[in-house]
Amino acid sequence: MSAARAAAIETALAAAYPDATCELDFRSPYELLVATILSAQCTDARVNTVTPSLFERFPDPRALARADQAELEALIRSTGFFRNKAKSLLGMACAVVERHGGEIPASMGNLRNLPGVGRKTANVVLGTAFGMSTGVVVDTHVARLARRLGLSAEEDPEKIERDLMELFPPATWVPLGHRLIRHGRRVCHARKPECDACPLMPTCPRIDV
Image 1 (cartoon, rainbow, N blue to C red):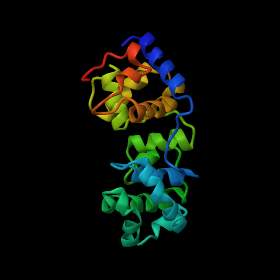
Image 2 (cartoon, helix red, strand yellow; image 1 turned 90 degrees about the vertical axis):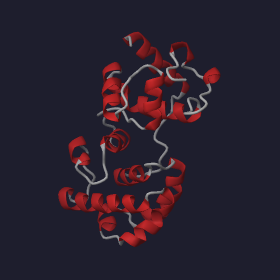
Image 3 (tube, rainbow, N blue to C red; image 1 turned 180 degrees about the vertical axis):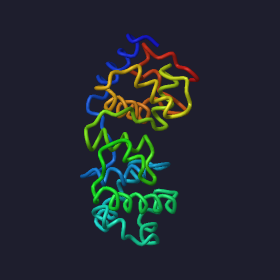
C-alpha cells in the first residue's frame, strides 16, 4: 500500500470519528486493565454493566488480590469464560501488588508479564489510560478492517499490528485503533458491511467482501 492511500484512510477515519475513544468505562489504569481483561469475547456494553459493582467490591489491586475466586466468578459471570477471567484477574492483581507495589505499571514489558495481559490489552491500557503511543490495538474489528482495506494480509494480530505501525505515523496509532474499532462496529460489519454508507469507499479495495 502506498503512503498516500494510508494517509487518505487515516484522514477519512479522523473526519468520520473525530471523538472515537475506548468505550469501556473506567476511572483509573487499574479499572481499565480489569475491564479490558473482561472484554475478551464480550461486548464493552456488557462489561460496563458488570464493573460498577466489581469495582465497588474490589476498588484497587490490593483488594482484588485478596478476593475469593468463587465470589469474583459470581460477579463477572455474565461476561463469559468467567472462571478463566477470574483466574487472570487474581493473578494480575497479585503480580501488581508483589512486583509493582500495587500500582499498574506503565510499560509494555511489565504489563505483558502480568497474568492475562497480552499485547492488545497492554496497548489499550498504555494508550488510553497513560497516553502512550506504543502500538495499535488489534482486536477482531481491526483485524477484519485491516484485511478488507488492504492494510495487511496477515492473520496474526501482532503481525497485523506491525504492518499498521509501518503504514501510519506513531502519533496516529492510538486514535487509529479507536476509529477502526468504531468503524467496524457501526459500518464495516463482519457479515453485511454497509459499503454504500462507508466513508472509506473511495480508498477501499473491498478484499474478501
